[in-house]
Every structure is written in C-alpha cells, then in structure tokens.
Amino acid sequence: MPITKKYNGRVIKEEHSFKVDGTFQSFYAALRWCKENGYEEGSMCSPMPIAIIKGEYSLPEKWKNMSKVQRDSVDGIIVSNNFREGEVIIYIFN
Image 1 (cartoon, rainbow, N blue to C red):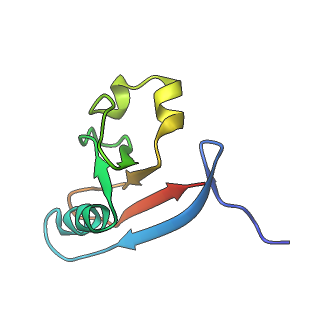
Image 2 (image 1 turned 135 degrees about the horizontal axis):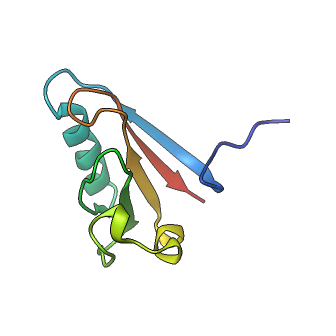
C-alpha cells in the first residue's frame, strides 16, 4: 500500500523541489514555477511556509497572520529550511 504524504494533516498531491546555486535562486525558481502554473504567493516570513493559491491571491500576505481556516484553504505552500541558500519545495494539496 502506498504511503500518503501529508503536511499538517493535508494530503500532498504534488511536490516540486528546486535547488539552484546562488543567493535566493532556488526561491526565485519556485516563484517562476508558481507563475507559470497559475499560482500566486503570499509574502515570506521565514521559517514559516509561504501560502500559494491558484488564481488571484486574496489572503493575508504572511503565514503568521492567517487563521487556521485560511491556512486550510490554500492550494499549496512553499517551504524551505533556508530560503536564502537551500532547497525550496512546493507542496500542492488535494
């Protein structure tokens, strides 16, 4: 039986990883993927996730300012242990 990957209880249907040399280059690559695929993102507040929504972004910009209901309504998130130099991952939820 396959293992279902989850983030904070939400099932992940897609995962996209970016690791590009250079300051914030992995983060910029993740943002390009979002734009190319119709997603808009909130603001970075590291080390918290960055919310992404398909279509027009209409939530509080920073994760810390979002309610649980708002967090549960996002289409995905951008996460990293080090947005400046590390790998950046996009999770798209079911």
